[in-house]
Image 1 (cartoon, rainbow, N blue to C red):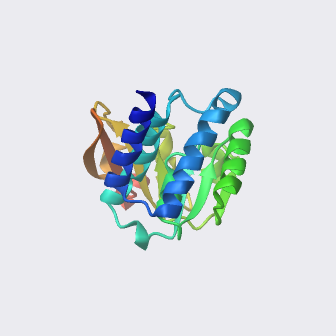
Image 2: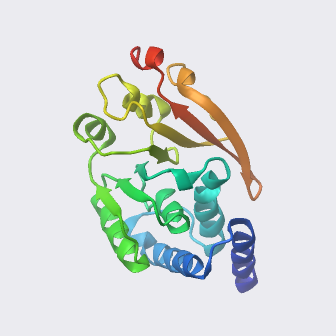
Length: 216
């Protein structure tokens, strides 16, 4: 029963995402390594392959349904943890330059080892916390992404007038019950709804506005 469940999860993933042979091999290695390291690094509450495939991999790459990632050069993942959503996106869109923002040293080590295992290039791990990152870094970033690692009120610090990232776009993975903070609401461009299994999810697209960013 377990093997059929695993096979079904991968079959659905292949049907929905359509990875090539190399990409599928990378996802398989990623899933196996994630679960083998999970207890040591405290990476995820999901402890089976079908859950990882659906709730981490497919959920991460869902972004590609709603925007043209081939036109994006550099992405930064805020509070990436075990690498979601950035590393699945990197696998599917290998041209992307990726910055993984993660303050926990154990998770940084896992990310480093995973990048090496999967043979990924143009991936940088940044150990700054978010507030320090927006004050003291100046990467050339087109798109920030995060799967609800921080509250939207914290995330929109990037849209303050003095921040070098106030022209970048932000995509926030949210649950169906999520409600925007009043200060974040004016920055929302659109919200897209999708399903992963039986769960309804939302992608919240934000961008800076001259009149809004000055008031943050």
